[in-house]
Amino acid sequence: MKLLLKLQKLKLLWTLKSPNRTFHGHPRLLSSDVYSQYESIRQGKQEIPKYFNFASDVLDKWSEIEKAGKRPSNPAFWWVNGEGEEVKWSFEELGFLSRKVANALTKECGLQKGDRLILVLPRIPEWWLVKVACMRAGIVIIPGTSQMSAKDILYRLQASKAACIVTTDKLAPAVDSVASQCQLLKTKLMVSKGSREGWLNFTELNQSADHSCIKTRIQDPMMIFFTSGTTGSPKMTQHSQGSLGFRPLLSERYWLDLTPSQMIWNTADTGWILTSIASFFDPWVFGSCIFIHHLPQTDSEVILNVREKHMEMYSSAESVIAFLVFNSLGGEPLNPEVMEQWKSYTGLDIYEVYGQTEMGVICSVSKGMKIKPGSMGKAAPLYDVQIVDKNANILPPGQQGEIAIRSKPIRPLGFFSEYLDNPKKTAESERGDFYVTGDRGTMDEERYFQFIGRDDDIIISSGYRIGPFEVESALIEHPAVVETAVVSSPDPLRGEVVKAFVVLSPTFSATDLKSLTRDLQDHVKKTTAPYKYPRKVEFVKELPKTVTGKIKRNELRDKEWGRI
Image (cartoon, rainbow, N blue to C red; front, side, top):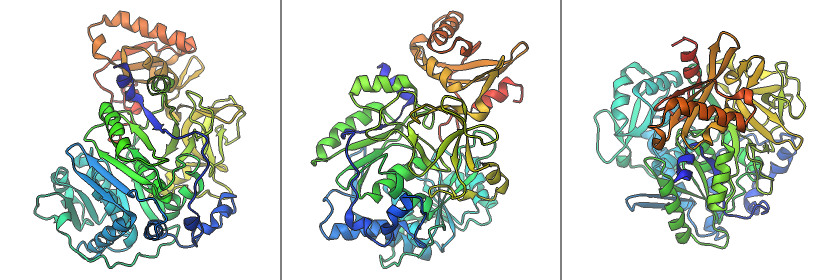
């Protein structure tokens, strides 16, 4: 099916609810001490609370609302897999279990407030449980993808100075192969039915649920994310209690707009910030149910089947399942053709979102907004997003520049704290009054933003500036193309030209490649400005990617320019 092939580029929010629904905040939750300052913060006065802890100020509040019978009876967390297993937790059960784990982390594992814990688990319930437990104990969480190699694990353990790692028996051997080089690692915790020498077993931890949540300041560190590292080594991006846990109150009502009677399903990798946003903080701020189907690999047909099955099982007046489906190129821009095919196939709209590890959601297409294929929507309410030049001057609509967010005189809640142990990189991210994203784009008269490409991905050929995304979007429309990446390539006449690396559909593998190259070039000329067509095309079996699935254009570019 052509649609399933094109899901290679899918990045979507699939929702069945009306696009004109208004925000549903729970009055009791929003009237608590922490949430009473909501409006003043939304208006930019920055009157944020001094202390905040997501576990006690959000999850425990929902537990109280639940016990008072003022929340629908649907679970807070619902997990299933393809083998018929199922886990359901209410907010009260989540609180009980996470307190037991918090005690285990501090007593049996010997961790204390401020210690760092690397969490490398697939989409299994323990990932959510350990995260909540860490928040209760004041332990800083460092999520990682299960796709990491021993080298990746070593780098993260050494760079973060983590005291504990939590993973499965699958990755335990890789951890053991490098653990001797990590002097600060004192505890290894394995989620497994079996046992392993030198490891504590999660299933054997047995502590009481008598635990008092640690008091944390809103600026205290909560999580550290390693960036994708498409250029250089991955950097540690530190987020605070406020930037992740308090932020959803101010902006996510415009994006997800969930209610306690609804649930969301997000299939992104647990190592990505997206899962922490869309499958943890944001749904639970609104008392919604987080639905997880544990898929070893993203399978579009399984996703559609599960949707049908669980829509019948989960029924209410406002029941909804929202999908955030990321396939093998998750984190890449969404091509207009995917949006059009999806709309044609399902009758549903895709609400695109643009964000970064450093900021979370920066732009989005919210409910009620006009959808423009190729556009990533308008700025999130927290942020003043502009297109700027190299001197941080704001550019007019239609002019290409760098996507930037105003960071002075008031640094918006939602910003990361710093690139940990890298003050130079932290300083370089600021230009004038703006944080610069490193992404290039444009903004139209209606303040819709369009992504062009990473600043270092821009191709300058005969004086023309060409973004790879537009060329890739044109190529992906051709039925022969499954995946593609566009980079610059040296040229004696033009300085550099556009080169496309193309992964072919199996049905075109026997095609004459010279003829197909001309066909692809002609296709791009007809689809976009002719000067943007790829003068060079190379057919490859696969594209190099980071552990989080982003294309390593820098590796392809370096190869072209003779640096590899």
